Image 1 (cartoon, helix red, strand yellow):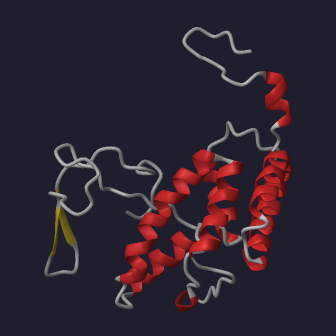
Image 2 (cartoon, rainbow, N blue to C red; image 1 turned 180 degrees about the horizontal axis):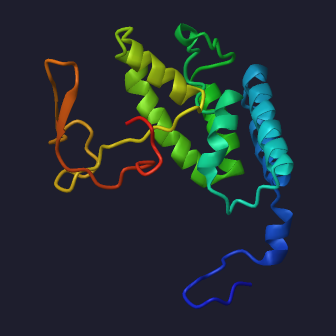
Image 3 (cartoon, rainbow, N blue to C red; image 1 turned 120 degrees about the vertical axis):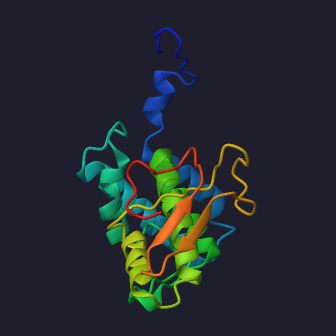
Length: 198
């Protein structure tokens, strides 16, 4: 047990040793397999297999900087599966809400911090997907985020508004030269210190 002052360990070392990623995945699969269509269950197992192999091949201890894992995870199609992304030449199969949920479960069981960081990237992907108007720089950003080449952040939370994405005070004004001026204050920018796109 952890005896460091101010730190509490809720689960004994004996139990923790038995909670390997493979064991956790087995528990999840046993409880989900009767509820899922075969294509979704197979995708879940495929994603789990990827993360177990990734953990073993890279001697992951989960003390590493998870941002370093994102390019490999993105290259293998595990940043988001909500959409097919055929406009980017990716043609993900399967895709959709259930597939996305299976991806999140596999990633979250592997590393919750990674799932949180990737989730912020996905939140940066969604507006680009639906509002890119075929603008080259937006499509470039979209593809780089979906494939894990780059990291996205979300800049929603404001001191006076909290995380109310509908009533933000920050403004964005396009300039004559195509650049933008942003005015406002943001706090708690998930992935902000590592992000390439916001």
